[in-house]
Image (cartoon, one colour):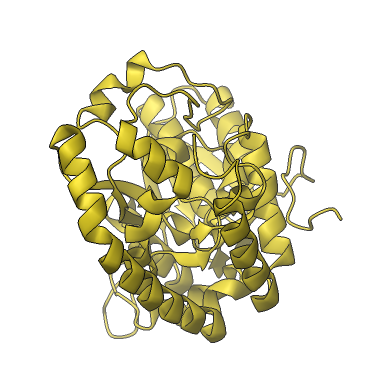
Length: 343
């Protein structure tokens, strides 16, 4: 069954009101900035710079915009990248509460220049006031994010998982130390819902200077992902940990904190997200998961980034509590199968 959340290659053009004068352009954004509008917005920005290569200032007018999802956030990041390339000042004007909350959650309010043409009734600019109850207004990106039942399952599962992790900690720690004497845990910055960054934790499965050696390893996957089935940086103990997925057990802490869910999409790195086009940002409409479609559908055999997107959007379309439980059961079966684990 085809997913309703589609990769938009050639969307129906969305009209944008653009006015330009004295090397300054003002682009008025629509009421909703989701994937179709976001793709059109990106194309409008690209066309704008082609028409005005010496553009000095671009103001994005958010006075009509009441909703933005992860694709909308992605289009703003891409627009900013274009402005940096052309040395153009970018300003976000009259940002409303919901958009402002999305920017604050992803720390983009510290990066973008915000301005208000009309002050709030009490004299506090809308771009500066920090609205309360962030999640109450943003959870409509996908029903799984606001599901209390899913969060309850996450908490129970995380507590059970952390209990198992506590039991396994000593033998795994001893094995890692005996192997090369390096740190037991490995942490890395990943992107969660809407692009919010968090620190993920794993049992270390690679050599301590793995990041420095990354350029020496060939990437066998097309697109922004990085994977090598015979990655020489993986230690002997690390290969066993990956084969059994034991290296991922510390992530139950991330699930308990709410950075991740038991089931979701694969958590990308900021480097990966930097290379995303707007449609790929749809992956971030839900929380990342310890497991998901990619885990039970041959994660080690995936060779194209488009396949990752397809699986992530399939999860978003089919999501239900029962579907999550089915994926958890399938994950357990995969772990104990001959072809389990990450390469």
